[in-house]
Length: 110
Image (cartoon, rainbow, N blue to C red; front, side, top):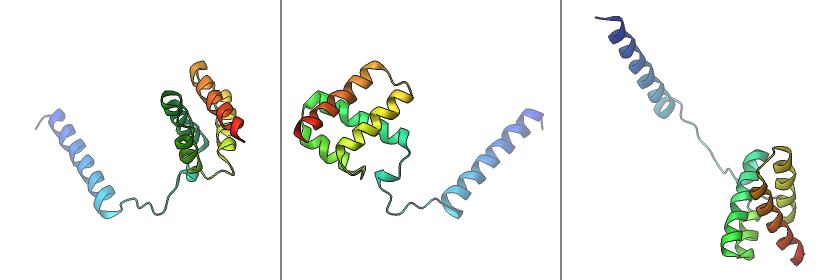
């Protein structure tokens, strides 16, 4: 048996055993997870996605409903936190405009 054949067989065996362990022996179980358990970078990305949909469709009620899933005190706080992180993480200018547009729309109704 050549060295390459042995290497590939051991690699496949390790991959197979890892999959069996991860899926059958000790699978991850998530229970009652919500969006508020996300890290700030993922919350910011989620808020940006909401801002993109708001920009396309103009449905502020839909955007507010989606932002309440983050479970901050208000949707405005969610967008402000996203803007703060996005500026620190140097998000692109178009992304910042989308977040700012959503922020301004929410601020007008508050």
